[in-house]
Image 1 (cartoon, one colour):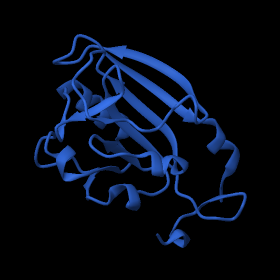
Image 2 (image 1 turned 120 degrees about the vertical axis):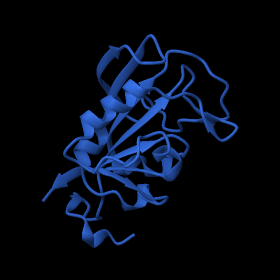
Image 3 (image 1 turned 120 degrees about the horizontal axis):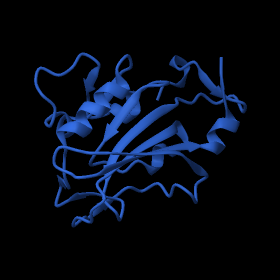
Length: 165
């Protein structure tokens, strides 16, 4: 990774990008089962596009398949998107483990299905244990789900280490 291209640095001088991560999980933080997403919802996608309007929304090809084509202008599809996203970019993750990127994420938006699905891949950041604080909770009606919960988590430790120049 070429850290010189980023304009966000921590106080120790090492370059660092800071992104906002979106994902959808079940009641046990499950992401996928047998290499397939657990569920999807048209109104969740609409909300995601509305929240990320004006910024770049990164995702892989698998995730992009659930969006209408042609893709909205702010969607960038790349298999290496977690390595390419820059400061204040949005990343929508469905089928990837993200713990190795946790020091580069300052906000996580969890969409919770409020159901338990079979899962074999789980969201791998331990939010409370790793210093994340729940900032807000919002419930909304989905298209295929009676209730979807949106949780916004902020990395309190990251706030202390990051200075934008």
